[in-house]
Image (tube, rainbow, N blue to C red):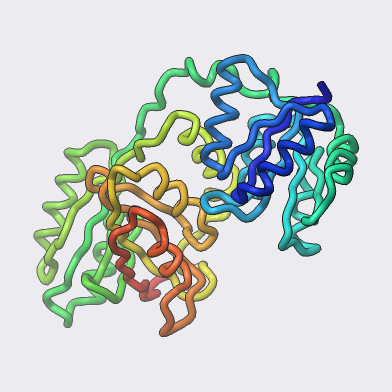
Length: 328
């Protein structure tokens, strides 16, 4: 056998053709239709002591695009040879893919001999022994802080700026944004305990001209262990280093409140989390809502990401609150 290959592609016909072609060439092939199933397969194989010698991944898929998968897998399995395949590539996309070590690039359509040649040009490697085998036995990570979102309406408009400044400078307020929408201000609180969250809630509610519409504590999303690990790695490696305040974001920036079917939380959360225009995404209200920040929309226009969100199965409603930049 020439090696064990994991193929990720959302088109069933391509998966069938690659399975038949590579099998005839002496490879063992397993296919996955999307990124999440591929993450499960890699984790399951690792637990069973089964190694993959190659990964072949498309770029454009319904949940997580191939470049994001590539970024995390190269952290988890740095020696694994990866071949990126796409029918919609360009020079920039190719350069991004090839910037990862031991990674090849192949444009669709291609013949099986072209695929085999591209695989053989990569340096030998596998998933065996590259991942952190102790991850499954690690102690659970303790939460170092408690976060909660407050939505606020200002009942005394003459004091709007005074109220905003008071909230903005208050200890325990991690983020404070004036918005246009169903409420006037969104505040993110971050403290060491729920008791201190309650204290801040009462303090803010006692401010003259302020009506607290809602309080919702940020929850850990209920994800499978391997998906949770993947999200954390991507967040640490890509999302967090690229995050800046709303005042530094290009274009218009908005909060989104997404009502969802909580039974589909894993699929919805991961899909939303990996949308490029989503700066961050938090879970609230027992997994029935997501709160996030999006960027890239033009003044007076609904961001395209809103349309993307409404197309996700299990998303019930998307509300937008455009941020008014009062402070940098």
